[in-house]
Length: 506
Image 1 (cartoon, rainbow, N blue to C red):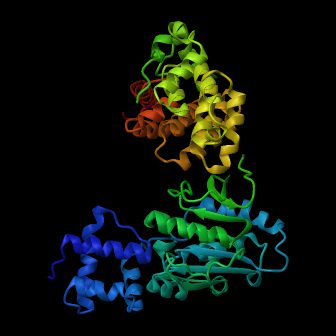
Image 2: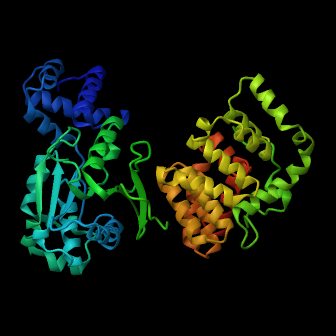
Image 3: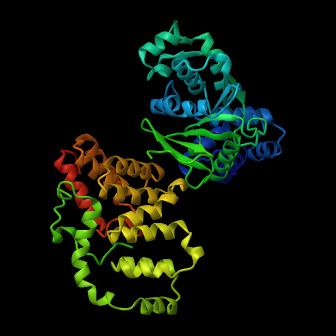
């Protein structure tokens, strides 16, 4: 067997990332090494160096097509992520219908369609809705894997591809043929397929304002950051104003684009371009532990109490203990910070660490107007307002950040909505924060509290288990900002107590 060394595998990975946009972590190096050996042998190049010379020279378009077949993920099935299709039918399509398309067809694109289950699912969903007939809809499936596209064009699928398809849908649109199922010819006629490398520019695929809906699910997670950002920019340009983008459940646009508004419907998150959102639209060390202030960890809070109430109760004792320190004038505080060369934000964060919230707010108010427009600055100001009990002001401070897909802003608004007694909106914003930042522990903690207040035992257990897993590795600065003044250990103990109370493991 031909031997490839580590540097050759790394060079192969770099070439793939540059051309196909795909990124392979270190734990998949052996897979890459095997693929490299197979392709060098198939091409009879004799060595990886000779193979790279030809591959990098661009003289082998067919070889890149073969690599796309070998390297892309092809797992899919019909109606995968059913909530996305419900949101499409019940929310996105009615808005498309109202948007004044005139007589032009409704245009949908499935990016990374593999063997066609997703675009065919779109066709079935549209047919089930009955609002559009075949000639008024154009659905295109795009993939770099020509073998999968050939399978898609045949329209013949295994029972495994139909594992999540309701029996009534299967009986209506599929005909058994041997061990497989043949898709209805009319549904197949609603979809066309294109072989394209989605990491390339493909200007013919993305004319400006040409698409109403794009499904690009479970692709960005395999792309390099640069390739993902470029693809999203092309999709944004190609969508009509008010058009929709659906990503996979583990994917967000956070850090990739600010041109979309997050939407939520039928249990699904998705994105809209060019329209306002309509979605429902170090450790802290100075604060006394909640248990010393009458907060029972297993119960988390008295019935009906909000997290803001808990923060307030916890703050009462420290208010007394630190009163002398807070009697220093705002002027003295600012002079001390300036003399030490500390930025306004850092100084305010340090004051927050000491629970000197009013001083921290005053310090932020004295910073420049340019700094005050920074999202982190505004979130810190909102957190301080929450800690002072000024939740209406805190919510108003965060509202402009929601359109930027800011998880922290959604979390703060969730706290404010809970304090106002609007549990439905609190749950929605906490869920949005958790979606936008899957590593953010406190939204899960809040979702556990909210679910407990609503008597949703199973969901409560799940949220506290998720919160516990994230809290043990949460960034100390983020715990300082959003942990309500409670230490990591206190929050961990609270989660464990709730999990044990509900019969789960800890």
